[in-house]
Amino acid sequence: MSDVDFTHWPTELLTPQASPFDPRPFTRSGGRTLGGLSRFTRTDRGFWIGSYKNIIFRRGQQSDQARAWTKLRTYLGGQAGLVAVPICSTRYWAAEGFQDFTPGLYPHDDDTPFDDDTLYSEGRVHIEMAAFAPLSSTIVTLRLVDAPTAGGIRFSYQHAMYETGAVIEQTGGDTYRVPVFPAIRQAIPADAWLEADKPTVLCRLATDAEMDLEFPGAGMPRPTINFVEAVDVWNDLALEAA
Image (cartoon, rainbow, N blue to C red; front, side, top):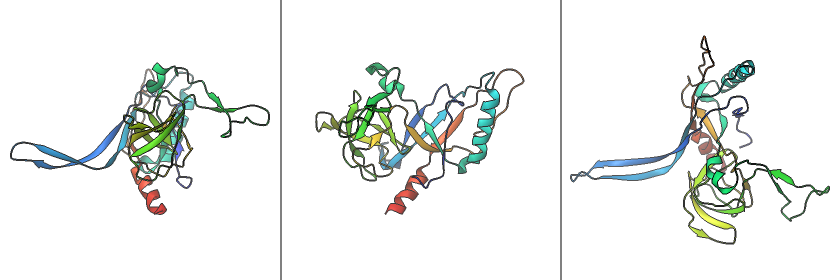
């Protein structure tokens, strides 16, 4: 992933009012039978599509925001460019006491602090990959370090985002086997920390015209940007690793 040329969406300046991201399973049908039935087959594990809706331009910040928009638009150059898009996951955790997302403090793997007795400051939700997850896996084992559940959540690793289904089994006191969508984009090592507070997904713009922008005569613009997961990048990385 380090060799892939991409940028990060500047959410601190270009903040959406909503950021829906949904899975698109890839299915095929052989058509209807004489009895009117249709049978569908999943041909791969699908991909993500999403939007940043009603991005807020504020008076007093509009010059900084307009420059950030223009720099990002120039960098991406339409659908050719790659951007890591943060997805807010607060709705998955708010009912579990994680409303403020205050960073948690954690020791080294051997439970020791730094030399000055301080600890790591990391995201409030802390989940690790408990066992090596090879490329194309559809079931993984998660370790809950500071999280209430492993089922029905989202996380990312190196800007590949996943969501989990219902827990298959509890394999230890804090480890759980769960199905994931999509299939693992690139191998995830055991004990790797997973981003669950604000997962990111590597995307391309859905069309070349997504970042067209016009300031109205009165008021501020509220543009919406549509994204598609950059599945081709993961495919190329998988071929290089083969």
